[in-house]
Length: 309
Image 1: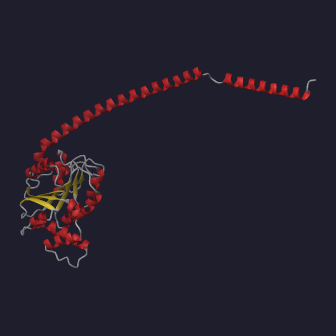
Image 2 (image 1 turned 90 degrees about the vertical axis):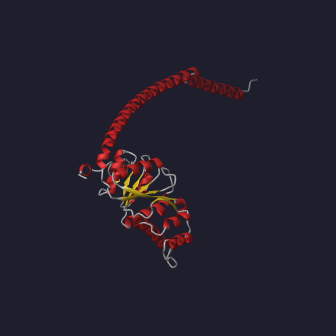
Image 3 (image 1 turned 135 degrees about the horizontal axis):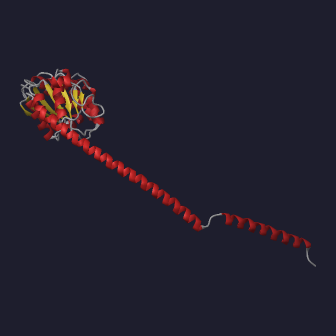
C-alpha cells in the first residue's frame, strides 16, 4: 500500500527542484557567455587605446609646437643679449667712477668665473675693486658664546657684561666699519686665523659699496638669518651701499630671504641686463632686479639708462 504522505512530499520536492532548475536556466541564458565578455572587454580596450593614442598625438604635436616657440624665444633672447652686450660698455662707462667697491663672497666655493666677469664690468664702469672678502658661514653659525666674545675682544669691543645678542650685533657692526673705513690695524688677518673669513686685496682701502655674491646652491635658511642678514644690515647701517647678486637659476625661495632688506638685489647678474641692473643698483637706482617671481623689474628704467653720464 502506497504511503500518501510520502507520495505528496516526493511530488512537492520534484516540483520545487524543477522550478529551481527552470529559474537557474533562465538566469544563465540571460547572462553573457565568456566569449561575449571577452569580446566586450576587447572592444573597450581597443576604444581606450585609440583614445589614448589620439591624446598622445595631440600632446606630441603640442610639445613640438612649444619646442619650436621656445627655440625661437631663445634665439630672440640671444640676439637681445648680444645687442645689449654690444651697448653695455657705453651704457656703463664712468657710471662708477671714483668708487671703491668690495666683493663679499658668501662661501669659499663661490662661482669664480662669475666674480671675475662682474669685477671686469665694474672696473670698465670706472670702479676700483680693492678688496675681496670670503665668509665661512658654517664656522660663524656654529660659533658658541665664548667664541663670539673672543671675536668681540679681537675687534676691540668690551663684551664682559653684554648679552650675547648685543655682542653679535656689535661684532657685525665693527666688521662693517672695517670695510667702510679700512683696516689699519691688521684686524682682518686676526679674524682669518679664527676661521671666520678670508681676505684678499688691500684691506686698508675704505669702500663705499659691497657686492655680496650668493651661490646657487641650497643651504639652511637659519644660516642666512643668523649670518648673512645681520652682516648685510650692519653694512647698510654704516652707510655702505649693498647689492646682493646671484646667477640665474637660484631658487626664488632662497633669494627671497635677501629681498627683505633695504639693499638692492640682482638675480641675473651674469647677463648683460643683470650687469646693467647691478650698476644701476650701485648708483641711485637700488631695487630688486631679475627675472624671478619676487623681482620688481627685469632691468633699470630707460630714464636712467639714457641719462647723460
